[in-house]
Length: 127
Image 1: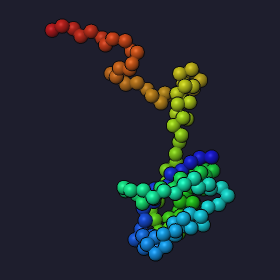
Image 2: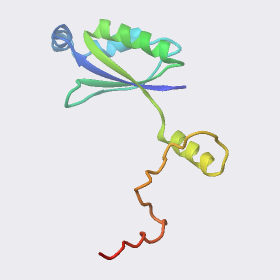
Image 3: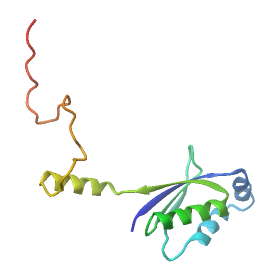
Image 4: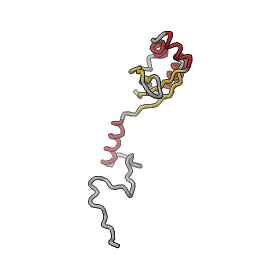
């Protein structure tokens, strides 16, 4: 099932609610959960965001509904990011190397960049 990262920034109202009841966000997330949404974790963080929630949802539409409802219930602005496991990129690259995928490669080399194993650089003419 696809994974989504939700970055939460509390509104003024959300901060006041958290101050009065520190578990209000946990209850808001539980109230938004359905059989199709699986919460993998809720974390308080430092920096530009106040909290990070990680969920699994069947599709973008379900994740968007969950994110919208959580934002309303928790008093938060939420940025929702679909997360793609990095192993999928590596699997795709391996299939490309073996000629199993057609189309553009994920790691198309720049003509001026050298890679390990390219051999020695071309000789420069003496001036």
